[in-house]
Picture (tube, rainbow, N blue to C red):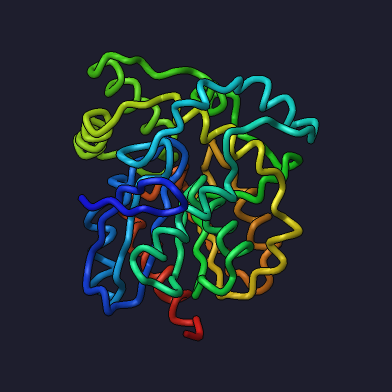
Length: 295
């Protein structure tokens, strides 16, 4: 897969479809690799006329790692965030948004439809706030505004965030599979074989847990976007499962409320995931929202 120089780092990315198609930038979540935007998901957008770009965020996968920053104190960062105190972080969501815009620059793309899941939703919100001239439409999936007064992750989901994964390959895969199944939701059954294959690929591409920790601190240090979200003028759709234990549905509702004219679509029984059965609905909603954009 190719690499691009962007925002003074290297970003691993790949693309699907004809470069003359409608550009759609997909941004993944906390600790997630670009391969978690499944190829069939990307190809479904190609079938709708999009040129799809997916990439590894900084500190994950095959993009630049910020090794000099070391391991952050997550407990301290969480405590400071709940008290709305400043947090010392090696980078912020603003920087990650700049990475994504830098990738568009490297690809010669002036404007794009942008879609992000979880932390990726926070990043695309930030792109739309900081770089409005680069955005055609916005889709925020299973994400939130950064408002610390909103309902937070369930105790079990929070424990998952705070517990380091095993470093041995098979133990990592088994534990990751359990986590995936828990987060998946109550209304759908995880395809364990397919999920295992992606987890194996992630481990073999790059096992780098300290990057996960730094990304988490970046989320906490970036604060509340609620007031800034009011500045977004592009067509926006907010997609969220009502059984999400990691980013409760109130986060999606708050996001849609904060962005003028945003459409909120809720999915029964969906957790912190995009189940195969409902993926076509997500794709249709994102495509229909993109169709409202003025180029």
